[in-house]
Length: 318
Image (cartoon, rainbow, N blue to C red; front, side):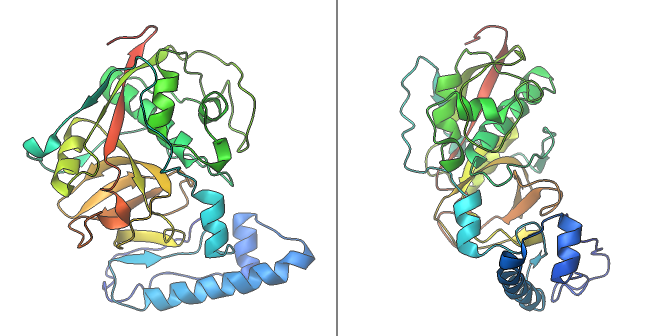
């Protein structure tokens, strides 16, 4: 769900084009309903969140806030439910997967980039962002490297790697465990938004054969240079993203808690594919300001570096 609006002719000083629903209208639009015991509490949270959106949108800003599926969640609930990238999880390579580290600071960015990648998905009420990041990386690399448009299974990655599934993980810990193994299609191993037992599905024929990463942390210009070669999986600090509606977002948070897919850049922003459905943000994407005064970049995007898998087909290709 997303409010309809137009940015044509709107001054950046105030997002007066944004429309706001009341609680009953929001429930009908989102299909999110509560029993009578909970409804009053949720309506109070919704009204508080909406008031903050109205206040933000009345100020000078490069981005606007909008009501969405998170509008009746408290900030603590949003973080606990949606943001479970496990920053402390080991990324030690315990398999034979080749891992290449490239010094992108030695390469100059060539200009604007906007990769065509797989459609935006929705992780639902499960902290599986890391699995969606991992799968976005595999699907994106299959497109750029093999011209294939496969849709792969996040549930398989959750069930069949040593992660905490809905409670957290990280994509670069999953890739070594997926090295050379069958990757199942999303339709044959459907997403359930909950922890499950490892099973099987229809083999897509794709294989993870290696992955390439930047240094940790990475500089702003080096991250753009990395994007010239391939879209990149990154970690971000997304605690304040819940009401993002559009525009170029800027903050100084460095507390990483979310895994996403970086798909492009301009001189002023990085384009990020999220996993909260196409009704959130700009069709499921967010633009993060470049040139942040924070050393970790906007929303901490520079802190953990970036990486992408190399994809082969049928058998491991090194």
